Image (cartoon, rainbow, N blue to C red; front, side, top):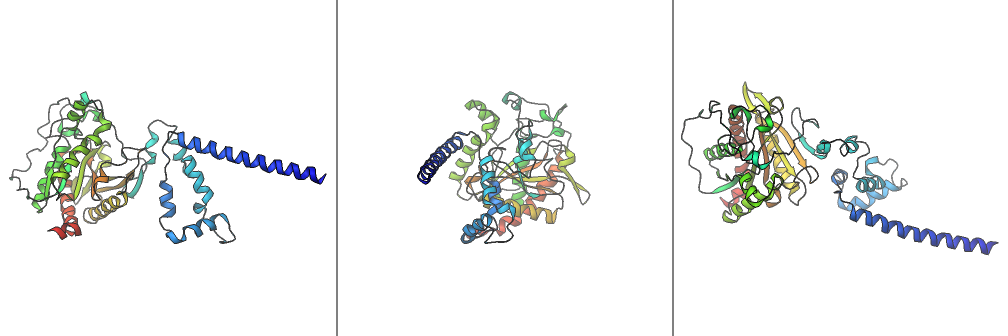
Length: 376
C-alpha cells in the first residue's frame, strides 16, 4: 500500500511538473504574440521612491509578511505582475472603460502636473481631417488684429540656440478664418493664420530677449502629400526637418514644436491682470530615453509660468504610444518641448499675450541653463 502511494505521488509530481512547463510555454507564447502594448507606467509609480539596493528586500516584504508587519498593497509583487500582464489598474475604472468605449482610449494620457481646471475630462486629443482639407485655402478674416503691432521686427541673433517648428503646421484658429462654422474646419496652409504665425511671433519675441531662434515654416501637409503619407506620419515628416536643422546648426539646445488644442475657448482662455491669454500646456512623450529630462524641463517651465502668470498653464501631459506618437521627436534632445498655444477658438490678441508671456519666462530659463552659459 505504501509503495503504491509512493508511486502515485511520483506520478503526481511528474504530471504537475510537466503541466507547469507547458503552462509557462503557453503564457510566454501568448505574451509574445499579443498585439497590444504592455504598459509599465504604474511601475514608475511603484519604484520612484525606492532605492536600488532596497528593491529585493522591498519585494520580499511584499510577499512574506513575516519580514514586515504592514505592507502597502501597492507594493505587492503579485499585484504588480498582474497589472503588467493584464495592462489594467484594478482600482481605476477608466482601465476597463478605455478599451470598450469609442474615443475613450485617451484615458491612458497621464497628467504629470495639473494646471488650474485640468482633469481627465479635458485631455488633449490628436486628430486631423484628410490632407485635401488641410491643403485647401480659406478666406482670411483680416480684421482680427493682424496688424496690431506696427514696430519693425527685431534682428535675429546670429547664434540660434532654439529651433521652432510645427509638426501640425495646418492647425489654425477659427477667429482668423472667415465662415468657419465648425471648429474642425479651422485648418489652413496659410502662414498668417495657422500655428506658423505663432512660431514667427515667438521667434521675434525671443530675439528681443537676445535669444536667436531658427524658425522652420515647412508646410507639413504638402510634404506628406508628396510622400503619399497621411497626417499620422507628421512627426516622421517633421523629424527629417529637425535632424537636418540640428546637423547644420550645432548651437541648437532647445526644440519647440508649436501646436494648438482643439478644446473650446472656455477651457483654453484665462484672464490674468484683466488681460485675456490663450492658455498653454506641455506634452511629453515617454517612449524614449530622454523622457525624464524632457519632463523635468517642461515641469520647471510650467511652474515658472504659473509663478508669474497664474492660470496661464493647463499643465504637463505625458503620452505613450497607445495615446499618440509617444516620442514627438523628443528623443533628439534633452530639452525638447511640444507646446500647445491656446485652442481652436482663441483670437490673435489672446495668442500674442501668451507668446509674450512665454518668451518672458523662457528667456529667464534659457539664460540660466548651464550648457548655454558654458558655451557663451
